[in-house]
Structures are given as structure tokens and as C-alpha cells.
Image (cartoon, rainbow, N blue to C red):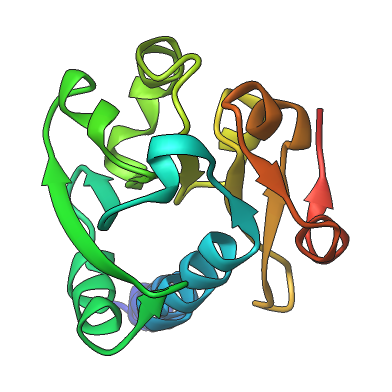
Length: 180
């Protein structure tokens, strides 16, 4: 190896280490705190009103797709109630199964189903919560947003929530980022 190729190799190695380090940091920054997500979901439930039959019996949270939030929601359900109602968490695979829940959590891996879910749940009192940013613009009532400083926020589509026959408290609207 010549002196110049040895320097070139060290330079290439240094650049690769920097790039790998940046990618690792980016992956760590993308780690999701599903416990925080589950607490947000619980508060969405508390500040949304279901009526008629939907306001009775067990409160069913459906999760479509694979997401670590299922574990956190089950932990939450074992220790909390919603206005005296038992909370039950169910995992779904298809849009047709989702019509028997009160809140549907759409995992990122299933976000491409948003249009089908919106059509399937049209007119049913189901609050659709998207794990991925931008889903409130595509039919979800609420979708999570992570800001540049890693602060967790949420978009809220009041019009979509009302079309589902639900009422949402003004406090929740004020905490979210309102979208159409």
C-alpha cells in the first residue's frame, strides 16, 4: 500500500464511522415511547364522548397491525377504567373486524389501509388514532406527530371525529394541532 492509498483508506474509514454513528443516532431518535403513546390514547378516550349503545358495556380499543403499543395498552387496561367501564384491548388483522371497537389504533405498518378503514367505519362511533404522522389528513381523527425537538404531539381532525358521531372536548382540541 502506498502512503497515499493508506491515507485514503483511513479517510474512508473515518467517513464510514461518522455515517454509521449518525445512522445509529437517528435510529435511537426514532425509538418510540409506547408507554407515552398509551397514556395519550387514554386521554383521547377521556376527552371524547360516545353516545347511545357505544357509551355502555366494555370500552374496546382495537389495534390493527403489529405495534408494541398492544403491551402498553394491556398494562393500562389492567389498572384503569374509563368512566367506570372496563377497558379491553383487541388485535385486528382486517378492516371488517374493526367495526366492533370504540377506538381503533392504526399501527404504522397498516397506515396504507387508512382509506379502507375510513370507508368501513363510516358512520360508526369509532375514534381512529394513527400511529404515523399525517393520518389525520387521511381519515383518522387523531395522529401522532413528533416535533424536531422529539416532543410528542398530535394532529386532530375535529371534522372527521364529528363525522364518526363523536364529540370531542375543547381541551383536547386546544392541546392538539388542528387539521382539516
